[in-house]
Image (cartoon, rainbow, N blue to C red):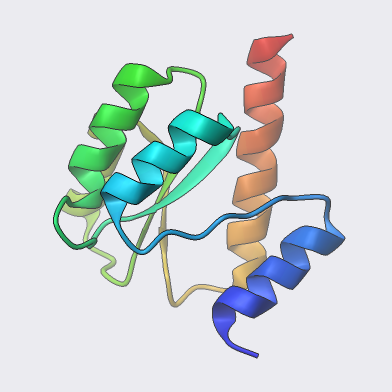
Length: 115
């Protein structure tokens, strides 16, 4: 099973619902339709990078919690993503448990704001 499948199974077991998009414009459209609590945004996406997609998403949906995800551990990129509206920035090579815990934390933070 690939990483996406493993994460999907882990999300299912922890009562998360996950959707996958390989293009940022498609991800933005999915977010508009599904109104997610949390979006995990890859920084390096085709056509429109994750930084600009995060800016657009946060402009439209203030309550969504965006987690930046990248294979680069560049602190400048982490700052850029956070400046765009991300609440966290993680490295793809880190343990999946950290991603799951960050998603859970962001989901709870978003629920607290909605209450």
